Length: 183
Image (cartoon, rainbow, N blue to C red; front, side):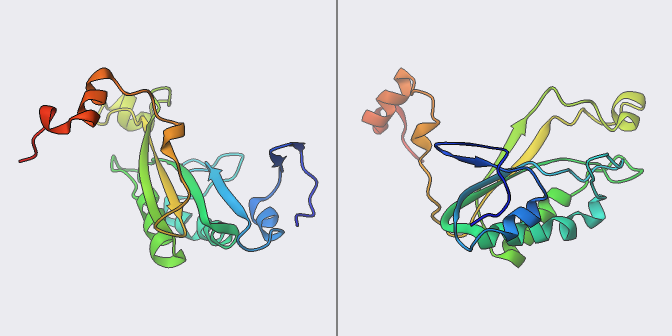
């Protein structure tokens, strides 16, 4: 299967460190249940870990998406966390994360199983020019998280992550008409 040496392994699997495209290339087709990642975002300033501008982002990340599609099982899932960005020099938001979503679905063949919006109040206020200096924009505190799959019915069971139902919700489940009448 994979020729690289794992960083560590447990009874439930192995962890590898390396270039994701090279590691994915070592895998056979349709062998992975879940890929979950938060790649470098399309930020305006160059970072040491290597990021690209928003105008180049879709073309930069598409080969990764294609490899994930290849190795993902038909019932598998691919979860992608992307932070927001502003367009260069103006107080307008970039649409790069939505362009990634459209390219992955329209060009690669993924289905969008669900979209999540991660509220992260600990994010630094940026860009400083529009948030702190001129006070033209609010602090960006949300990441988009896309849950992709190869099929309309990826393997999933949300009962494993739900919180217990409130007493009111239990009554609603037992007798929906006593609490709610659709109009």
